[in-house]
Image (cartoon, rainbow, N blue to C red; front, side, top):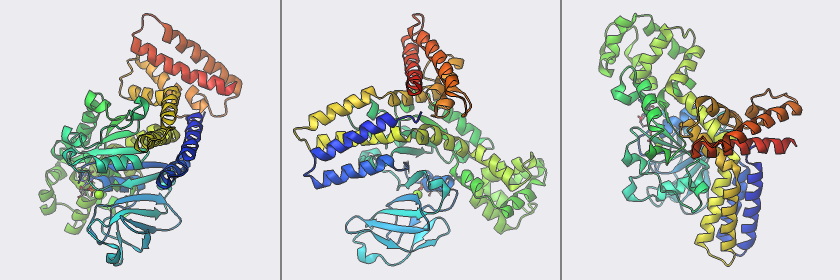
Length: 486
Ligand SMILES: Nc1nc2c(ncn2[C@@H]2O[C@H](COP(=O)(O)OP(=O)(O)O)[C@@H](O)[C@H]2O)c(=O)[nH]1
Ligand SMILES: [Mg+2]
């Protein structure tokens, strides 16, 4: 079952209908056509948050190459979309005027747009957006948006709201998960509960290697904080999950080179007790005589891994990471990047069409409010109807509740509920826990038995209402499978 297809069809039809209703309004037509095109495209994932939270570094970690930030002559402040393309190419969209191309150069960090574009520039923020095509497998199914730092909430939510509108899903970065940071997210717009719910947001506790003052166990401490906070009401209301990630170490893992491995291995040859005192602070590491690396290499390692990363990497080499590949894999796991990748895959990529439907519905809703017509009321009713009938939204909400243990089911049932609702893969066989080549009769038998079980659960008078509602959603997932088989 490719979850969300029926929903996608209904949303597509509704967009087409809106195009008809707004046939004499140029800008509305353009807006609706953009949303029609987006419906079939790759996942559009924005990386956003306050300044300095490690957004560009995380983009590099997700791409696996140093492509962010894209710097320009006219300072920062523009959006950058990263998409897969046959060769590196940058298309610049100024705030006013037509898009134009600029040559690209590699910079120490990320890329640099070359050439004088002053003729186009009327101010520091003359560039609105850069579309960067870059050959990368990581960008084939997901387009990434790197954003300038969000201003504090009291400066308004325009920037954040614009980004929210532009993306299907959002990674919101914060170093501390403070209330002031979280308030920078725009309040949810739109009227209908399911489009309003934050099905498309994951909060990242970023620069996790610096948590707890960069102690030896900083990454573990950060993961514990994330686990605790993901269940607290202030966060459950605004996101699907909270994940702790060190983008710095994650990127270092994905781009690890043999000579870097060799340098780390040279350090790891020293015993833990000999090396540890030199790794207590950056200054000590820089000035230690007993360390078998020249100063340039020490700087390089600090720059690439940070002190926590150097400590972690040497420990991993000592405990058995015998080549760059093994070390990269262990660093990927410890950095939290592997977990983030799997959260993005489960909650966003596998549910792409549902998230896109959500964006399109909210776009129609906004248009109907912004440009009222005699038929706007009809459009709004249709949006409401699609939302309330779409089982796909209920499934996504259920998966979020299960992830954060808010669904209130006993552990064993929660595991099955997650699988049936598509949390371990959206295909029929994955939902039923069967091999991909299982024959239809087997799928049917398994789905029928599951439906029976969850029907009983949903009617069990002894269960709290919340659990019975959860069981109803799972039952509908089973019924949808049976319907598709039948
Ligand atoms: N220790 C550590 N430093 C980081 C991490 N991510 C980013 N940084 C550093 O924080 C600074 C800001 O990072 P950047 O990615 O440009 O943040 P942005 O402004 O949110 O895009 C840079 O000096 C990065 O090297 C991280 O995970 N760990
Ligand atoms: Mg940046």
